[in-house]
Length: 415
Image (tube, rainbow, N blue to C red; front, top):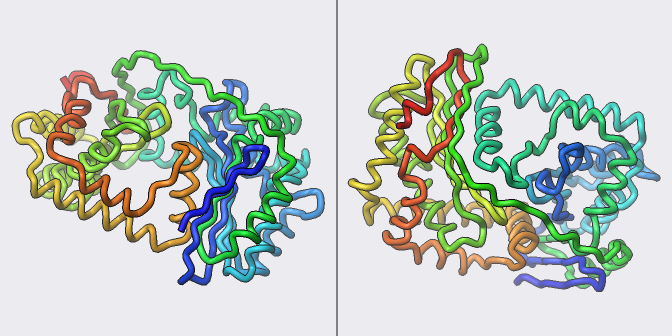
């Protein structure tokens, strides 16, 4: 059972009761991410996420950690392009204390100047970690190219220059503008008393200003781009992609199923062609990621430096092959069963349920019941897949990134 409540200042509560479990996941979501940042603030949403764990007016960072450990809870947070979430998972009897700690962090963080400078160093190390992961690097570069000219173009983590320049005053300003009632949502899933929860959050968040700033975006005409980043790496990391579909698009599920059929499992076309038949890659996969106004469909393969041309040619052949050797009913059936199984596996975890309800309500304005999700997957037809495939089966429309040890003419290889 999912209960929806809205406070007078616009703060929303979405509460899913799961009586047979003994735990609960609670998350405070903010509709603020890297897409809401101006250029000079790039990385500020992510930096704030870090800083909320670094001490409040009454708790040090160590006390936040020890108080969380004392109730056996697990606390974490993440920043995305369109939202930030701070959450805890705890046993049901300790939920009030978990909420108190989480709310203290959310409302009373000190943003101590010394802690801020120290945490920037941590973020700089995180940047180095991403730079040292050529697969992550390739995906970030591709995302920036696909979303060029939109509010999704910038990296979530920002740059050393922008993060280094962020001050305590900048953080306070950004939170005044973005952390307002109309942009805040509380999501819970598990075994809890809804009335108790409503009372806790109504008292704590009821005084947030009611503003709900309109999110700005642009729709620049997509033009394929190509980039090779030469690095000392053991294999070449190839990532190609095209604009996909947004969260509310009728093709959301067809595109997700198409990604699974092309490169989502061991029986997928790319896995069989690139890995099993040719032995070109250990890791090869396709994925579809959707946002409020945009989407991306991408394919990744990690291959030997001297196998880039062969791999890219084979991938392009699989894409073109969708026109002459289209998806079969059997392939669609298998993909549907995999997607439904994956959803069911996730729904047995209170964190996953909290994430799903929170994200859907925050970004789509509604929740999706398990029955709706299953029905939406089952309803996809081969004609739906053809409509989705028409968006992705032309290799000449793809942007491409290569992180490897030498220059390559990616555009020519995709032609």
